[in-house]
Image 1 (cartoon, rainbow, N blue to C red):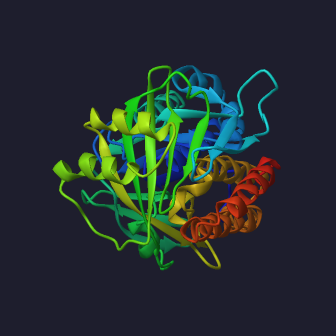
Image 2 (cartoon, helix red, strand yellow):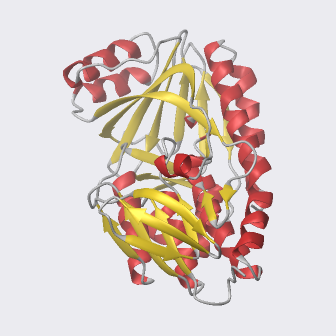
Length: 375
């Protein structure tokens, strides 16, 4: 019997938000956890992200919400402006961790990574960098994991948390396609304007732009470029091209555009989504986070789903006598919630491309209300 009550050993593939959260939650439940992370220490992708209410609620359960709030920029509103730069509405998000604390926090990815990584190691998690999983075999009650450096682990549980392009997912025989939605997302790290105390989003005649505070001093500009094919640009062309795309926007975007002029930190990525249909597990191995369900960035809730996955996984494994039963309960709790968010994010992306922004705003708000319900 694959008992959760005996020797509880786990290998987690990926030291991102989902992997580190799951590792900490499992370790606190008495599991011996090792993370295999292919990247070097401190390596993170992207400049910043928004921890929405459900993410803060989960991190508060781990005692980490206040550290994130102190290191980032707390906020509770999303302000919309129309194509003329005029106010088009404000969304006040529910404060899930208390009326005196913000509804969400913008935070730099490296800062969040340091907070999660430090807590995982404090709980006894071993993080090995420069390695990933190379082969997986189910052996009765155990999972035999061969790592890329040739070493082998025999564990009770394998967790694939290695992102939307997960290699571990394929090794488990769980296949899904990556869907491109005709959009490229731009981000640039800039000084935070004093007026930017919450998320600001600006509808354009062709694209959508916005600003997310990350700290008292920093923010990131984003622009969603519509109706384009997937392509790559030389690094030297990124900042000039982003300034060009921001030029048609009126109002406060003019100030944002001037900030981009001094930024040397500009990235451009395709909007991709993924949703794993059916089972998320094979035997005692399970897929979580973006490897199972990657939404478009329009709902800013990918990190929230990742945090929730880690906590719910540890909870269900703690509640059930066997790993198999725990994994079944985990997927049962998560599948519909994650599907709803991914599908809503895709619908919002479609409305943006059709310039139907006023239909997108209430959809964003209703989905945030839905996500405020317990995971």
